[in-house]
Length: 474
Image (cartoon, rainbow, N blue to C red; front, side, top):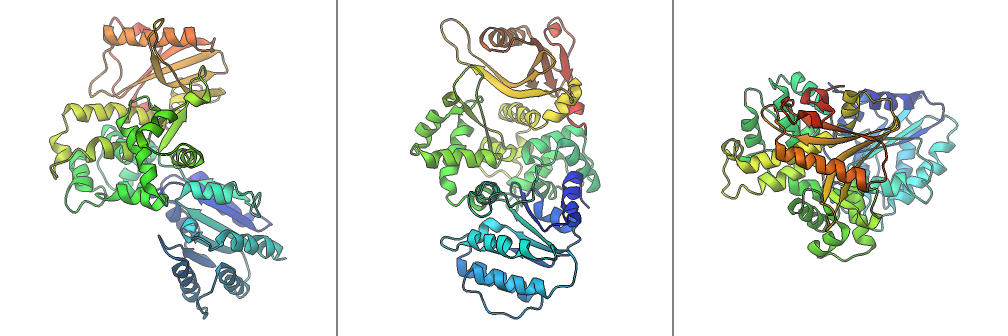
């Protein structure tokens, strides 16, 4: 059963209705459900289906490709190169029954070995043969978790594949609402606060959610997923980055710096210094690829140059790994249950809730009644000096109707009370933004909380409030 993904399914099925042959790239981070979506959408009915071999040599990739053809009844030797491999695929297609022929090649990035010239052979197959068939019956779907590779080699290719894609579909993680539906379909009795806490750890990755067990509390489920000796996701962190990047150690140096740094993030200069990596094009590629894969985000204040942009860790699972999993030094199998009310647990909750809010911008706009209003969504910060205090605002919505929403996010197990000290902090942010930004719109302060806001003497500083239920909207 597929949860959500209606738009993506419609796009995939629409490929069969086109008069011309179609070339579609489906991409998204590891474990997000790309393969499952494609197979279920087409009811596993493919003219040819193949999956690349993780960390395989050229010989292993070609052998596996031959084996996929043999599973369909074709007798052939192991091809010497990818050009021969695609010639064999052509023969198979020619012998296939009349009608649309769906070719599904999964984990295409794994097949791209050094000096293998996979892209050249794929280009030749598509440009020189598939699009030249008078039947116009080919639907080629390539897929991969290495989002940066797909982007560089397929989406932004400057060679023969440039402009050849007829469709591109990015599969994004589930929203809170979709995770709630997933949990309900699995028979899990979870309240929205439970779904939120699990989302702050697992993100919207269906594969992770599939391991949750009925009858266990949220804390018990987290313990059995990450901290027991047989935990299914105990080693997921290393596997996640190793699969996506050919030299994961350099990417992890950047990630580790961001996990240990300030909540607001780090500048490029600081990341270079702390990671001890060399400045240059390679470092730029690391940052771009981490951002492309959804692990970090880059933002700059409207009043600072791009050189002063900040990089911030935003992946839910990665944040959980560094702030919680790594700290289980004594290998306590009940670590999450035993630290549930600790200070460190509450610190993590605060950071994680902010990330969840940033992942639900459409729901926030809907709650504010501005879904149809053109909006520039950004962050803003200013460093302090002798004239003014520093200030950071994680979420700013500059609206075309003449208003700007300054949004603050607070996780609390009880209705949130705005103290006098916190009211002063909020007022400083408003003053700093009004004085130092180039934005002359009217400012509205919005507070996003898990359990609402107490209407005390400081409540009037905010114009609107958004609660957890609003984040679960469709």
